[in-house]
Image 1 (tube, rainbow, N blue to C red):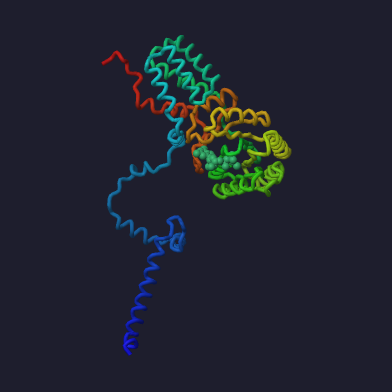
Image 2 (cartoon, rainbow, N blue to C red):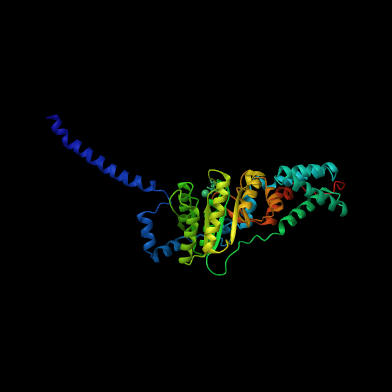
Length: 391
Ligand SMILES: Nc1nc2c(ncn2[C@@H]2O[C@H](COP(=O)(O)OP(=O)(O)O)[C@@H](O)[C@H]2O)c(=O)[nH]1
Ligand SMILES: [Mg+2]
């Protein structure tokens, strides 16, 4: 009997609980949506552009806003600034060593130490020796006696060393430009292709990517993802397919659709090096049958591998005519001297540099910005111009 009397109470409590649960669920689910996920609300906002509401909001928001200035920090960095900031360990390292060395005067030991520092910065033994010999010669002729003068001379020589090359990427006046991208596995070929594709689609170009790395299925998948991210079309085949055929089809497809640019990804690893080079040669030959000569054959080198990258490069140069280097991972632990070594020992210009894993992390190689960055910390930290004799 008592239980019967309590029944309405229990039902009442259950109803309240259910109501609370529903309210809680509705309130709880909404903020759980990730901010970047579109919701029904977002879509509704996009679809209905009521002029009145925003205007009303603007009218309420009467606090005076300083106009131009606060916007400035949010502006994207110029490519030069990005370049300087992202250079990783290469940035400033050589400069501070050189300052220490010449801080003790322009002596024989200082020149020897400079040579060692250049070698340690990956410039290479031979190139460092030649560079320092040339520097000493000039220093003597020009009467260089202070650390500041020696440092300025070094910077000038490095700039000159890097200034000669043509770093532009060749384009066709008519039809689809073809860039073949080569290099050892893991150096950053596919990533660099993705970044390049994005750069050119953003300029309004139609870009096609050919997945001629058929050695692993994952390679085409990765290129496909970059295609989606950059808005480029991907031509691919099954794992183990003939890479030359994929490159050939890539061009046929690009040409048929009137694409502006074709980027061909290639394998960086096969059973052995001879096979890899043979396959690369064949891919280029078959591609060029229809496409004509590749406008660029880009060799991707990982800057963190230092001098090892140079022997890789030589093997690729024997197989195909490399027209430019894409030097990746300069944002990491790389010691920037490799840039000088590549140009001096291989005679190939570094055309592009990779400064990270994101789509924007590709920059044209700018020798002046690079030399500036190598000596970045010097200008701020040490005043070499100070005459020690002065108070
Ligand atoms: N930090 C850094 N990582 C990079 C850069 N370029 C590529 N990578 C990374 O290097 C790895 C290998 O790149 P991938 O494009 O697959 O090399 P591939 O085998 O030559 O095609 C990936 O994890 C990339 O994200 C770069 O410029 N900086
Ligand atoms: Mg790859």
